Image (cartoon, rainbow, N blue to C red; front, side):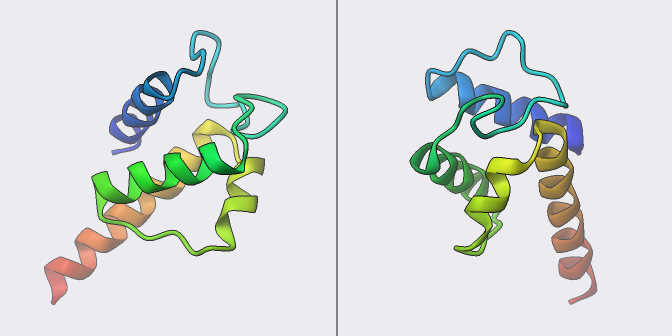
Length: 90
């Protein structure tokens, strides 16, 4: 699942006109890496929410800027897996 999420995130960054050539799992999403500003982080979060049926809390945007691509994709994959497990139980 992490690979699928990572591919989706990279596709979305490309669609948002960010250079993804040198991005790896250790690249931060914020100023020290991809350089997503708050609106771009919100845009990426909405795209991920729409694709995977997740919701990020309003206060998570600041945390997202500090995350690496790898941390972000693992977090999303974990939430998707947890949601699927919860759905299976319900």
